[in-house]
Image 1 (cartoon, one colour):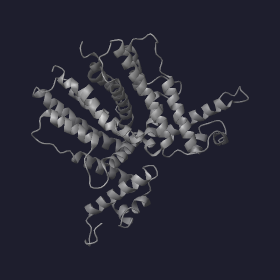
Image 2 (cartoon, chains in turn red, orange; image 1 turned 90 degrees about the vertical axis):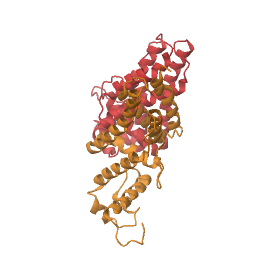
Image 3 (cartoon, chains in turn orange, green; image 1 turned 180 degrees about the horizontal axis):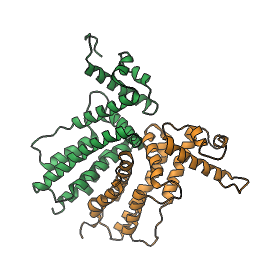
Image 4 (spheres, chains in turn red, orange; image 1 turned 120 degrees about the horizontal axis):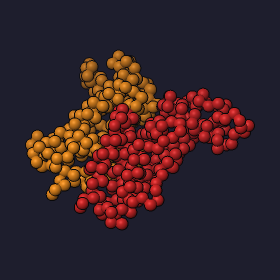
Amino acid sequence: MSDSRETVSSKDTEEVIMEATFRALSKHGYTDLRMRDIGEEMDLTRQVIHYHFDGKYDLLSSFLEHVIDQYEGSVELDADADPRTELDARIDQCLFGPEFEEFSHWDRMKVYHELYTHAQNDGDHRQIFNDHYDRIRGSIVEVVEDGIECGEFQAVDAERMGQLITDVIHAARGRRMALGHEDAPEEARKAIDEFILDSLYADE
Amino acid sequence: MSDSRETVSSKDTEEVIMEATFRALSKHGYTDLRMRDIGEEMDLTRQVIHYHFDGKYDLLSSFLEHVIDQYEGSVELDADADPRTELDARIDQCLFGPEFEEFSHWDRMKVYHELYTHAQNDGDHRQIFNDHYDRIRGSIVEVVEDGIECGEFQAVDAERMGQLITDVIHAARGRRMALGHEDAPEEARKAIDEFILDSLYADE
């Protein structure tokens, strides 16, 4: 928090609360998280949380959307890239993540995967994840379709391949975190190249 | 519980507690589970839980091993099967699961995946999952290696392919549960055939 500003806008306050939620989740985990833990991570009074959010569940739903927005917004692509270059960039971004000023991709992904598993008991969070999944998978499907259209890729089932790649990325990230397999993303990247993307170049 | 027996062996009692834990977890989820919830799912007095297990964590660790034992023990294979038949059987078993008398494969997998995600904060559970993962992946690697050895499969990196298939299975199961994608296992099976196992027959 900057002390040089006398007023803090509503948007800034929500950002402060989101970052405090990150810190609190990193320390306490989703299961044991209490509103007071978030309050302890901020310079602002805890009452502002209750002003902005209608309880812990509302806050965590907003937090989930915040994490997903940052994640999706981070993909930077050259508009003139050929399909293979774009496909590689999208896969790498999802597997290895962007750089952030505070909290690494993996701090964020840890919370993301915890909320993902909990979504089986939670219709609202499930919807947020489904929308996100549609966009991530859709962006991969689209570049595969572009490549097929311009003759660079074989005419595979783009939807099926997009889903497969999305699944492999998700599993490798999850395995790195849950089981501590640090090399899971790198190994997944090699496996995608060797055993999945080779289908796009079958006739070469 | 059968009323016709006067004494219940220690092994039977643990089995009763495990099944009660299943029911309690299905109703309350991992996060909110209390020992009393498990007690309410049994005909036996709740004290037997405390006699057999040193608290909730000890019980859940035993429960995790119980679920994994059932899951791994359920794979039945014809000893004379050729590598492709065996590989198909193993993938199907992991994706679609065996039949149990009580609680479906998916009831079990729901608990399994919840504990998997929590394993990032839990060294003991992480070790149990890592050992399990080694066995599941190892069984796929082994059959791929057998197929290569007898000339039925191309000489691919068997370790890498075994890991990739294990990841896809895990992701598809997780997606079915977390996001409600009922067709995820069937679609994953088709994607494995179309885009991964095709590498085993590249020269055909």
